[in-house]
Length: 221
Image (cartoon, rainbow, N blue to C red; front, side, top):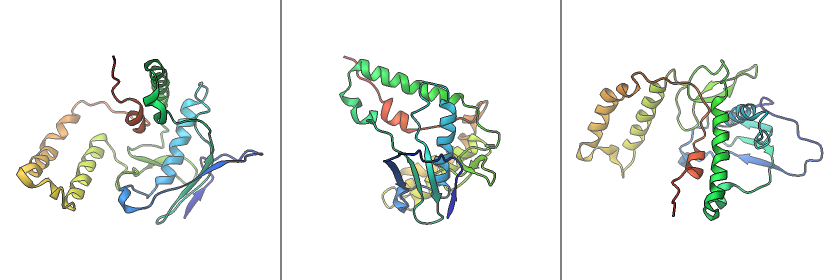
């Protein structure tokens, strides 16, 4: 078990409610548990720093305790924050209300992406802590590999991992019928590298759930 006070805050006196989260270690999730808990704690620490001094500085919960394990379930104990998740009510909101919510989320994303990532995070992938408490590069929570020296390496590894998984699927059958797999392999070997020619990349925080829940197309009447 790996546990630490890095990224944590003391529980305030008088606290009556908190959230105790257990990570789902079922293989069916397809998630990588190597540094899954540490990644979340480190990410939260950086987001808190990004929003510091803004009107959104209080929207990130404090972490009181955490631990990860090589097998089984890790945990985080964190601040309970009351309120309603926007994705639960977004469909019932008027267009004006949705516009306000999405504008706020865009502001939060902009603050996150303006954050200067620590120099100790020198690769792409996930996050963890070193023995001194510095946030450093690590494996992603969705892939057992990395961290990666370049975005091209990261994307190439994603292709490789997905193709390996497809080989084990009786439904997908490795995408071999009708020559599909051959075309994919040819693209990975010959065409993928060209997509990154002249591409200027930089390290930023990414939270894909924002696009999933809040930036789906809006129908105007």
